[in-house]
Image 1: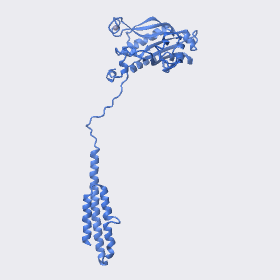
Image 2: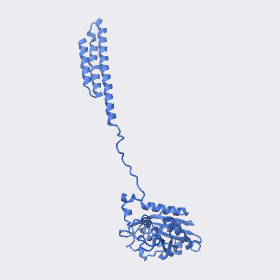
Image 3: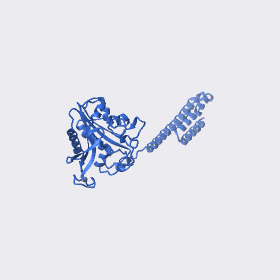
Length: 339
Ligand SMILES: [Zn+2]
């Protein structure tokens, strides 16, 4: 009996030592110590042992069980330790590795210029208003005093969705929409994207941006218009900037003017930038045509106002001395990063 127990113990230990994963250890435990295990079988054979020998055999069985359990436990602890170390090694963080670069975007020159213009006008008490880019012909043309036979309505210049709906060719329809609401006085700018049937070149694009301005109140005169735009030009291009108003024609304003600013590169002496003239054209403006006021439900006997429109790209190109408008749309990050 003693030899038998010794044999079981040796076999169990040999199998434990051969085990490489915890699951195998469990198999060994079941095989030798389980209900149907080899050691249990020995206990079941006790009935054949002489009664006086039973305590001794019982003790031997217990000792064998304890010995096997000890080795099992030790092996298990050892195995877990090795596994834990392997896991730690696998999950280690190398703090010397270069980090992934988080590239943060950059404001577009158009956005920078727009925010600058908005800052100036909001500072003078203007509200920023937006309107739809897909617009009714009625708002884009008719309410702005542009009759059906006007060249601007030509399909050569305008993207028509159908005969009543266009991609707006200017931000002016926002003026008509605000005037129609009838809340007076009005002091607003309307920045936004506009569309015209243009070939792409250094100064043209089928899609570009305008900023429209409108003031309607009692006793608004051309002097208010001149003063406002002078402040705007000085804020935008520097305190030395001079303005010049040249008579012009727009259907929705009367009288109308185009505004030049003195060249901020040469101060008006004439250079390559201003093509030698000393002046740079920046916007169109005028007193809102009484007919436009009427069509939008405002009494031209009681109210008057002025409007102006400036190209956002024009300002960005001038301010940052960019000589090709296409650069603003290509979104080459090497170019945009400069501003
Ligand atoms: Zn110049």
